[in-house]
Each structure stands twice: as structure tokens, then as C-alpha cells.
Image (tube, protein in one colour):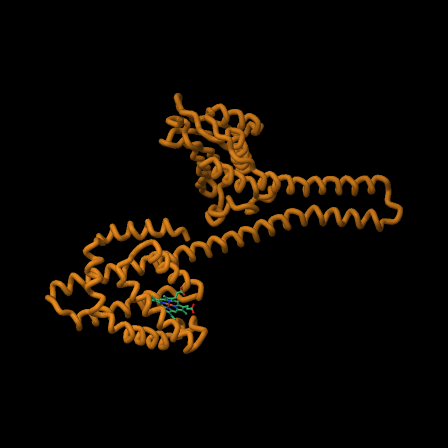
Length: 389
Ligand code: HEM
């Protein structure tokens, strides 16, 4: 947690709810009227918790812990009315939410408990109010706002911790997928090697021809395993981009030429005259275009049209690689850029993951749309070099 950021956020929320120095003064005035009811409110708070097993289960230290917690809650109330809403205050209040997340307290109980506390505070205020009804309404409004600001801090803590845990879970799932992918890709060649080695070790009087055939198989499979490792190493060692302006149309044509597409695939180019240069690492973008064009070729085994286009989309430049091929199944679409997620019979499923990683590193965006049976369109957004220093 970044305390400066948190405090800035709190200040922003204060402005949002129009919290002013007058509210601070009002809180000062309220405090002596309701301070005497703090112990009673705290007793009620913990009595109610005991009636809710899901809330109660986070209290693991029995009565002793409850007694200690009563003390911390009284202090919490005193601080609430202290009028000192500085950075330390905000951090301490945020940490309460964080502590609740750590002990596994469901956020709804914090909300319900605060709501009950709020009712108790309002009741105490009404019972002891010495002035007019209008002034009571003003005081209630101020107190409600202060409690809402505190609740916002607790919720912020819940949210950041929740997001952190979700990201960690997603990372773990991805590691599992990558590990599974590597295992899958290496198992095949290793199995073939194992069978050939078994033959070479155990065959009685193998013919020179057979021996040579098995040795060749072993060599080929070692090559396949090596390709997997090279692809992985390239993925892991991807260099930092060196951005410079480059002409998109020239690169689209160059990469399409290098792909040596069959004649059954018709390539069309659609780049308006005066298209501004893109700002990215051209050699890395070539890898992406190469991967996308290869994918398009594989999606059109019986031919079709490959449309390569670019257009300005201020302040970006949009490149489109569209085919009229098989398309991608709707359920597969959200996952095709994950490493080792391959729907192809051949190919290890790193091409699109690599493309996405390169575009991310180049400050761009890669997206895809597809219609099964009709084709797929990949869109790359890159920064345009126009207006760059
Ligand atoms: C508005 C609602 C609540 C407030 C203002 C509040 C306040 C606090 C405070 C000030 C602490 C001490 C934090 C620290 O050690 O840094 C704490 C911790 C704790 N709270 Fe709450 N609490 C609330 C709701 C609840 C509820 C509904 C439960 C349900 C059982 C609960 C259970 C606990 C527990 C088990 C701890 C950990 C105490 C320890 O470390 O031993 N709290 N809370």
C-alpha cells in the first residue's frame, strides 16, 4: 500500500463529498455529547457478532480476544472524533480493512457492523442533542459523511487485497498451463526417441538400414525438442524494444513477401496515401506480422483473401491482418493469446502469446475478432510517430 497515494485518494473523496473545516468543527462539537455511550456501543457490537457464526469464526482467541478488540474499537471511535484526518489516520484506518481481509472476514459483516454502529451513534446523538432539530440534522449529515469516508477506506483495502489475490491465482494458473504445455510438447519427441533407443539396444542383428533409420528418427526428434526450447528461450529473452518511426506499408509488404504465400491466397493492401509512420521497434513488429500472416495462411488451407491494411486512428495507427479462413471458435477466442493455448494440430501455441507480449512491450494493443467459417481479423494498435518529439 502506498500511503501517499492513499492519502491523496482520501483527500479527493473528501472533496467529492464536500467535506470542509466546518465539518471538522462539527465533529469536535459532537464528541462530548456521545463519548459516554462508546462502551455501550462497543458491548452491543460484540454481542451482535456472537449471533452470526460466519462473522464469529474469525475470532479465534475466544473471550480474551473479544475483550482486547473492545479496547481497539473504543480507540477507533475516539480517533474517529479526533478531528485529525491526516495521512497517519488514513493509513491506520485502511489497515483495519486489510487486517479484516487477512483474517478472512467477509466484507458484508464489516458493512453490517458499521451500519449497526452508525445507528447506535445516531441514537446517542439524538438522545443527547441540546440544540434545534435543524442543527441535529446538520450534525447527523456530517457524522454520516465521516463514517462513509471511513467505509471507503475499508473497502479500498478489501479491493486491493482481492485484486492482488486474483492476480496471484491467475499467475499460478498460467505457470501451470506453461509447464503443462512444455511437458506436452517434449513428451512426444522423447517417446519416439525412447522407442528407437530401445530398438537399437535390443534388436538382434539389426540391418544397417534399420539402424540408420532409427538414428535418423532420433536426430529428427532431438531437433523437434530443440525447436521447443529455442521458441521458449526466444519468448523468455525477448529484448526491450527500441522504438523508431517506420513505414507500415513497406513492412507489411516485406513480411508478406517473406511468408511465400501460395497462389491460392490473394493478398490485398489497403494503406491510404500519407499514412503517418508508426513508432515502435520495427524488427519486433515484423515478428508479430510474420506470426499473424502465418496464422492466416494456416487458416486458409484451400485459399482465400488476406487483407493487410493500415489507417490512422489518432493518436494511434491501426494495422489490420484479416483472412477469410476457418475462423476461431467463440469459446477459444478469449484464450488464444495465452502461452501454449493452441487449437492447431501442429504448432506449439507460442506464436500469438509472443505477438501479444511484443505488442504490449511496444506500448500497443493487439485484439482479435473472428467468425467461425468466415475468417479472423487481428488488429494492432501502435503509437503514431506524428507529434512525437
Ligand atoms: C465497522 C466495523 C469494524 C471496525 C471499525 C473494526 C475495527 C477493528 C480494529 C480497529 C481492529 C484492530 C486492527 C489492527 O490490529 O490493526 C480490528 C481487528 C479485528 N476485527 Fe474488526 N472491526 C469491525 C468489524 C469487525 C467484525 C464484524 C468482526 C467480526 C468478527 C471483526 C473482527 C476482528 C478481528 C478478529 C480482528 C483481528 C484482531 C486481532 O488481531 O487479534 N471486526 N477491527
